[in-house]
Length: 451
Image 1 (cartoon, helix red, strand yellow):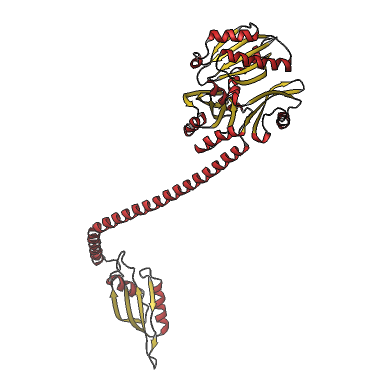
Image 2: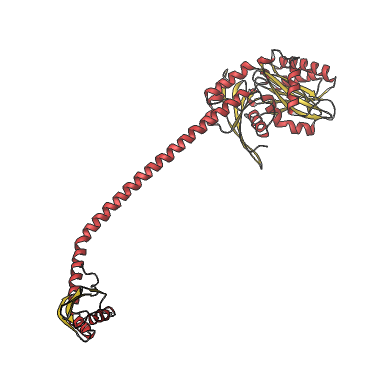
């Protein structure tokens, strides 16, 4: 069982059935949808509902629109079975093979051989269905038989509980005829769709098919017969008349009636799709169409996604830009509102520091003069002392010899009171006179002071 969602659509006479199967590792959950009246345009009615359906779509056609055969081939490989079925079909096909669509599926494994379902249907009928669904989007993934959807509902029970001898006849009544199956030991030997206006006509069709079965597989009595029908078909196929007609054609075999619920055939088609049943009358070109449509849709979605991301990105960028601008304007307005108070605070702070500078004796002119005097060597005299608060002290002086000037400069450089000592020009007067010099001593600047 393949996990996924599968939709079965049964194109019955005058109605269309819908069912959805949701399959996973735990099993299959089925949901039946309302049956739609179809008149003579069941493909169009089914296709009109396509947009509301999800998953892989399997469409079933009535058995009267196909030639169904159960054949035995000495092979197991699906490719070999398909090739053998095509070669064999050329012997009984009512039309040239290029005008027919063929479907093949394993029905049962025999000793050294395989029993195979083979179905043929005109390509014109297939293309009518494909065109109807193409207008609604794309052709379906599977084209199946309603008869096999019916068989899906009871095949396991028929295989397990089939009669030990004799034959079993199963009939499913439809609006314009019936689906027939004959089984030996629960294994299908004959399947066909017939048209019949009533029980008598149906009995004649069954008799013809049973005669062909006896010719091909030998004469065996019909042990029992089953009739499956929907409540809607009860009026057209009275139980008493059906029982009498089947007893006459089967040789008085017991006849059991079973009720078939609305939508049951679509259930079987959805189950077959989920099971991955082999018979598929859909042309290979439909698969290519669906793949091309998926690629186009993927490209459109990719372009749409890129466009959406781009639009979101551009929108986000411009949104962020506008937000940033709004924040900037708000900050500017706030800064403007705080500028006046801030300038007033700074001015007050400057005044306080200036006042502190005036009242503080640290690095005052007197302290600077004391520091210079203490480091003044013998033989050096000061002629000028120019003090600039928190800036510099400019000195001019003279010494009896140049060495004393250099000793004075070195002493000032070692003083922690000054941050920097800049010596000026040292000039000696002619005739054994004194050496004159200039010195600029830098004071530590006041914290926060303007330069």
